[in-house]
Image (cartoon, rainbow over all chains, first blue to last red; front, side, top):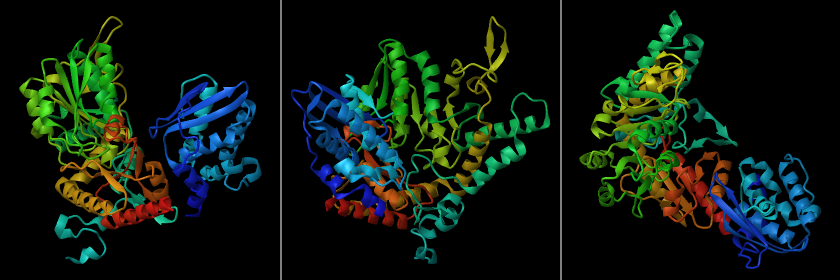
Length: 149
Length: 421
């Protein structure tokens, strides 16, 4: 059960129950649907850019605790960051999820996103954790849809 | 109560099925998963294999392997004989009038595609209708959509009620002059509804419309009798009935098979070939281009032997007992809702939990060594009908027990408590 508690930490349960920035963004500059064909879950990410800055970011959709919490944590983390910073965050987030089990997650570096580090022990769930990030990437690239496949 | 009730969920009087002995024939069931006894409730996806099936596969490659229908040598003749014996075995299993009506394919998906691309292309033209039901697996939707698109035809869908029962009256009304094919699941893979195929065939035949049956989920659980059902085509997969993956069967009525064009071209399906013109073998050979899955067909026959040694009536009675018990026990869990409550169901229990996504359920159960399926079960339109994106699905087979159902219920209760925190 320990690994499970690692996966479903309080912070994840909280973001699952009360997802932050869980709303459509009326004046978004771009948006994209992230879709996981394996489970049928989809998460739509809205972004409002001001030049290079992520002025506002939100999401909507259906998903498991992991995908919802990850989307919620992502929006909290990226609001106010620049595009370049967001790209860096995504890269290091993916890196964290591909580390092996003994990897010590740097909580200072990752902040609340570190709570998702337990996902790396559950390979079948990594796509849940990255769904919103892939949707964000698609939105920023001007695509309206992306899938985890 | 008999003495066996101490160790098994069902005593022998109730079902004439000794689960302890039966489980011992499936080596994988002795496995421990993450330190727990292995509870396998994903049988609708694929069943585990008994030792006799594993041995038959081993025996084929150790002792019998050769290509069929062409070699003039001892092993080739032997392999041809056991391959053709497997066809006769399968014909008996489904009570087909003749073994020529049994075509070996890779599985249900390939079987339905074969029918759509050969028979379907002959029958369906612009403006025609293909009638399917809300219950269908994607593999009984997409091949017909591809055909309809190619032909300018349309797909019509028989509605279901809130229990997951097909609306029979609506079905009868939907059969019309433009209906060319009816394609139906015998048992819903996602929610377990048993569809009254014989009655539905009768109605379709009144109007001269052929019926294609997806039997992937019925063949493992109940006696399927081609002459009693009177369907025009019946398709099923070996791996869902204790056999190997990559082998399945298309049954068809003679009157259709004799006129159908080939599905794939190649070796093994021709009479003679010149660069100008090829003539084809009669059926079933016409539909088995290339070297078939010889081992698969032979081992599927062993799986059928296994099923009949247990007895399909025993299997159906035992599994219905499990389903009733699980329905009762799971219903007592807070916030659990069963999706699909048809009075006639087979071996599948689909459910959702308030506020806990099926994926999360599956991950938690997996930690306790329990395998279920979570998601849309390749039946997205059906999920939509019930207003969910997916469900958690427990599906049973003859080696499952009431004790396992209790373990899963306990585990589910833990999940409910956890997410309530």
